[in-house]
Length: 80
Image (cartoon, rainbow, N blue to C red; front, top):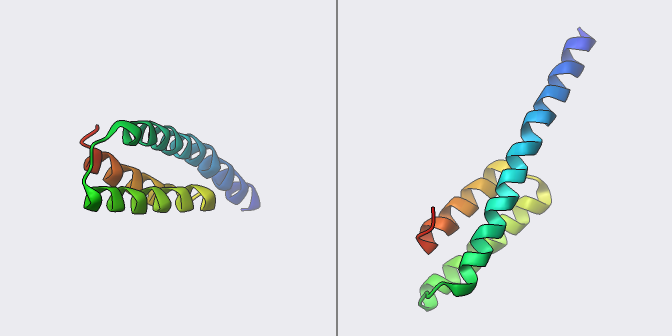
């Protein structure tokens, strides 16, 4: 039983790490796109909030929150 639990924990961490790395890479791309984006004051405020959320999620290693914030940021920027 313990072997199954240990194997499950290892498998979960192996699959989660690459997904989080993708979020970090997508976040970096979004931040680069943000540097040249032309947003009004409302858009700038929304982008700043989303960057803060993504940074916080990244710090906490919360993959789902990071992915959601980066997706919203890309949507705001009109990026894919």
